[in-house]
Length: 229
Image (tube, rainbow, N blue to C red; front, side, top):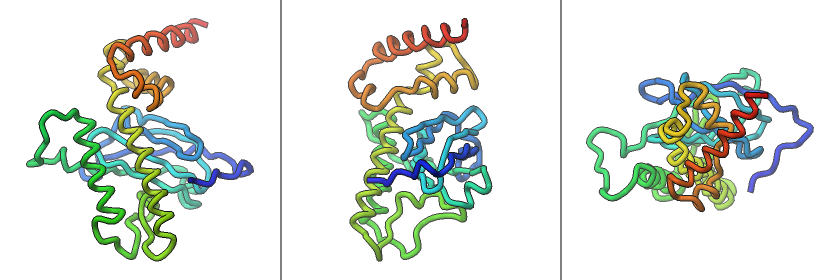
């Protein structure tokens, strides 16, 4: 679906911060995935992250309680070397929102994200100018109604699926569960979570907390072995 970046292009380590779009507070444990390379990093306690990128790469950003979004890497972003990513709260997390009974937090968030996505790709009027800011945040899932609309829709659905996978991983592989079995805190916890982040496929095949306990124990053995050497 996405054309891979040319290998001749140099990788640049882009630094950034993930924030709440309204309160401007830092968002920790947000996942930032380079769709082209498959690399995923996690924002630290101060919301900051570092990730390797090339021009034209797309970053998919997801955090619990927020609408997912995407960022297309441009020359101006590479020149600045730093980016501020601001995520919007999900409607289900806002005061006065109705929450359906019997659903877990991920399912509630996923329903809200899917409604917002469907409105963007066709259930609401698409504006002529794509929704974006000066740095291009969000352009990865917008639709150009005048050119290759159906191709853009397919690309948008692919990106949406990617961000939903990351949102599910964030729901299962969260700070509370990892801290419970590792006792790690702060940036040590975030670094362990990033280095040992399970795949969406593995988590779907292993739905129990007991599965995660076994997984974490195995990763801890490798972690302590590396640190002892």
